[in-house]
Image 1 (cartoon, rainbow, N blue to C red):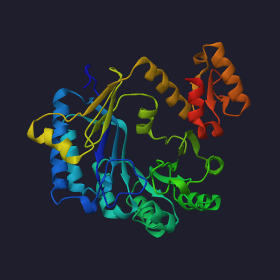
Image 2 (spheres, helix red, strand yellow):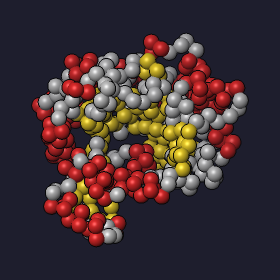
Image 3 (cartoon, one colour):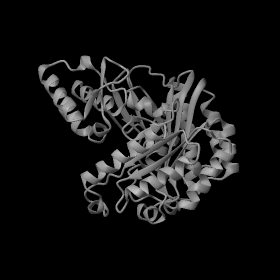
Amino acid sequence: MPRANQRHSSLYLHFPFCEAKCHYCDFYSIGREKTGSGDPDLFEQALLREIDLRGNRGDFSDRIETLFLGGGTPSMTPPDSMERIFKALFRWTSLAPVYEWTMEANPSSITRDRFKAYRELGINRISMGVQSLRSDHLQKLGRVHDEREALRALDSVFESGFTNVSTDLLCGVPGQTLDDLDSHIRGLTAFPLTHLSIYLLTLTPGHPMYRELPDENEQLAHLSFIHEKMTDLGFEHYEISNFAKPGHRARHNLVYWTGASYLGLGPSAHSFSLADRLRFRNPNSLHRWATPLLNENRLPVEDSEELTPEQQELEKWLLAIRLEEGFPKAWIDSDSRRKKVEILIKEGLLEPHPRMGDRLRATPRGFALSDALVRELS
């Protein structure tokens, strides 16, 4: 637990329930087939208790600037349950005059009336998981929607009044072509999206699909194509996997990517206290998370780790390399690093920042090979 009295203005709430567990997903979630009849009620009761315990400790800032509802599929939670949860939260804090409140959603859980109710609660940004607009790829990935359902869902999101909308896509999917990616991007950007996240599919060596993944050259071709296509469409490539229309970068995710503090609530939720350089997380089990809250009146923090100076140095580079702003030239503080930077510039992986003369940044190819950059520079 944090030792300093850290008051957080960025909150993450984890909603664990899904219609089905996707084949590639590493996040804690419970598919509908494994959800007990009382689990949603247990979740709500425990989350209300966690909010009150955190509020009593003074863990919330007076104003919340970013709020992110992830999962799982938060959009499966009925609006009346959401309202009870956030009435409890806003007894302890309130929203800043300018805030970002994001809810993740899947196409199969979206209806216009439900999303109007979410918007009336104050949610002002939607992040929808599409992943592909090819039904055979969606089936391979374990998604429960098809192309038509994804496009109908986007219609419903905009018809319900949301204007700040992001979607997710995957690249590097077995059997995926550049024509597929072009078609997906064109299909989604036919809507007035403000943001797209396009992630390279990564799997563990033991995963059944691992051997089907494209090789590194094909993955790099996918990533290069995506950069060119998205920037041509007027999106800023501001983070390795993220593209935004000007003024619409994901504020909550930037909290993570700039090393700022955030507080997570719900099963498996992670937190970071900058004042203590401490990471901590809740149990990745609904019942192990809920039991101490409801039975012992105790916060369910399971693991914590205080970052060593070496870890802090590594994370400094990990975070800086992944962002468009890059890092200050002052960080190149040794002959060894200067020589490495010269080589990386010649190899087209680093470049002087075009707008900030005192900084360097990864090129689009450097974004794709960011792990190698971090190894060289940290």
